[in-house]
Length: 131
Image 1 (cartoon, rainbow, N blue to C red):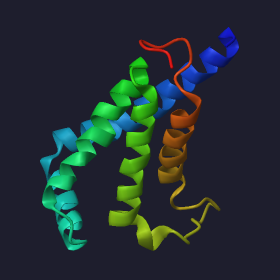
Image 2 (image 1 turned 120 degrees about the horizontal axis):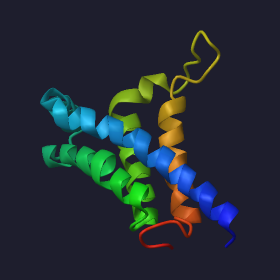
Image 3 (image 1 turned 60 degrees about the vertical axis):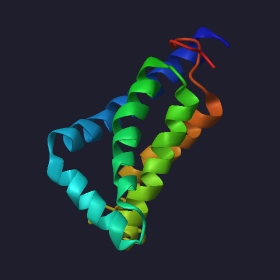
Image 4 (image 1 turned 90 degrees about the horizontal axis):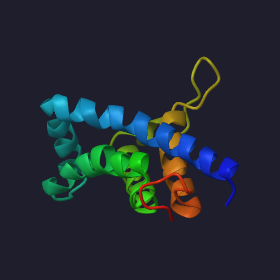
């Protein structure tokens, strides 16, 4: 792999992981977020313990992605996290276009498809454990 490809993957990893980590830190510092997510998980008839998965998808996975350690797994965890976020909170937004002409779920789509992209393309050479 050439340096340009690896640099592009590094920039992508830092963007995906860094931006997602902000969401995770907000959840860690605001315990009411977990209570809200737990309520939504239970509403779907799922075990409340699944709500803690938000910490894996929004804290652990982004850290893995940023440092490039098991980055493909981190990307998959971010994508899974976003599937749950869409199912739990954003189903009503699937067909909404905002006043500015954007899709209401474009941020969620970025995280979902960004995670999947990382799963398939790997970390690049500039990583703690290149894959």
